[in-house]
Image (cartoon, rainbow, N blue to C red; front, side, top):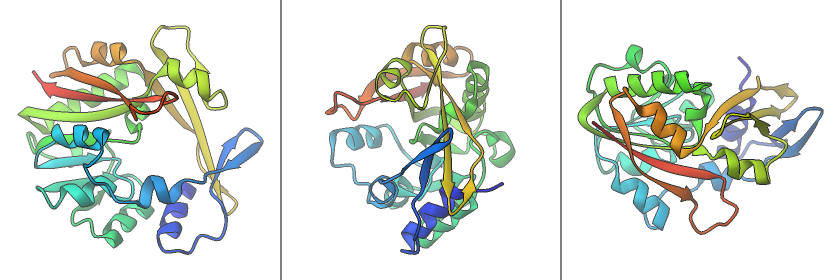
Length: 242
C-alpha cells in the first residue's frame, strides 16, 4: 500500500522533503504545514495536558500508532515501552530517532501480536482509535486491549468530538444522524502518490463510555485537548480496568 504520509514525515526528519504533503479534499488539496511541530518536536510532561497524560501511564507501556515516537522516546527512559505503527516509514523513523523497541504492527490486531497481560498501560494519541470504524469495532478493540493488559491497567486514548469538529472542519466532517457519532475522512498526497482514504469513526465521550460496557474497561475521566484553546476539537479519555 502507498504510504505518502509516512514517507513525507520520514523525509522531513532526514531533511530530504522537497515537496509538500497535501491534505486532499476531493479534487483540491491544502498543504500540511505542521509536520515538524506535530511529529518531530520533543514530548515533555511539563504542560497541563502532557502532565495529565503521563500521570495515567506506567510500564510496561504499549504506545499504539506511535508515529515518530514522540511519546515513546520520553517514556522509554521511565519504564519499558513498546511502540507500534503500521507504517514501515514511521517505524524506521522511530528507530532512527532512538526508540529502542519500535515494531510494525496494528493496534487492531493486538491479540496476534502480544501475549495476555503483557502491558501495565497503553497510549493512543493521534485519534487512531477512530479507525476502528464502528462502535462494534471500537468494542472489539477495547476487548483486545483488555486481553494484552494487566488487571490493574490504565489507558489514555483521544478522539475527535463529533460536535466540536462539525463547527470548525467541514471539509473533513461527515454527518451521522445518530447523536454522539459522526465520521471524518482524510486523504494525503505526496510526490504524486495518493493514499487510500482514511475513514475515522468519531464518538463523543458518552458514546465511548457506552462502548466500554462488557470490555473490561471503564472511562475514569475525559478532558478537552488542548484545554487552553476554545476551538479544540479533540478530547482525551483516561480508562481503567474494572
